[in-house]
Image 1 (cartoon, rainbow, N blue to C red):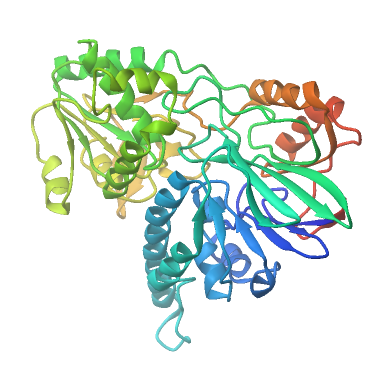
Image 2: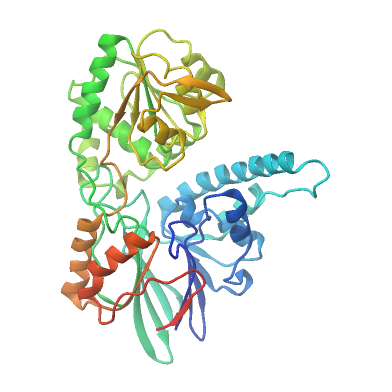
Length: 464
């Protein structure tokens, strides 16, 4: 059996790992490479896995760096099945249609930059390619073994990362020899709201594990609600606007859930809350449909609260006109809008109309990458550039950490202990991590493995 690493090798985007036997060629994930446009476009246009020759695709979850290039794979000729959980299928459809829209806008932007004499710039894929992907999808519920052939079967268990995310257990036979292969996808954290903790699985011959935060310990989530309560009560007293940039998938739903808990406890002040993101609204509807796979606390809440994603005073903004009208409101209010790093989307307009006023508050609830507008706001620059204007940053800035959906070093230790308690790991490959994180995770994993863990580079292949 051969495993080749065609993405998320030495980096955290473009997840693609190919498993080959004498009889089958199965791709684990097909994510978009993200970063500088010129560098990533070439990577996204090339498929080293030979799409037409694949026997199947296994999708761990619906984040863009894991599912975002499935339409490109379809466009390149793949017509086989794509296996995922039911919730992942529903979220992927929303995320991929949004991605197709972004591809169209990117192509238009590039065409303008290159000029009318340049050959036409095509998007990576379009809505028809997304429709083709959805026709290929076959859902497999958690805990059910499904056979791709007599020599290959898979089972999904809950990864606890986002709704529908899965650890994939595979049993693969080659020349009469059965091997057990485990792919973590993105492993989640313990104790996050809404989601179950990651499922521990038995040891294996081959482990492919992510390492995003293998060298970090996350702050606890316990204080998030307390800080939100403090910020919102102060906003009512000062008659402030509160702008919360949040990713549409996962982070927004968690935030709404926290606010709903405060409302149910009588601790939320009387302040309107607006969710201004069409994508967030659609994804929240998927959360409602798949409540049965969420954690026990969510199930208990449903006994007294039929919809934990709404409460009196919360409104999901539908139209662009409604969104624009928020910028002229004089009363205090909260707006939750994408994107999480403030680089695009409706949140940029809300920030433009809010950050000059020292009474207003910007609440950052996620990681802000270098050189993004969100990072500049987090670092409290005196001025920031928005829509070609230089704007003074006078608003208060609050950074609430602790909501990362990725396992940290302590979570990995706990999960690896489950492997060790069974039979350990024969061979381990560490992917989806920057070099420092991958190296730190290799040290955590070393005692569990028969051989020193391997950190593959892009394009490398290994016989196992």
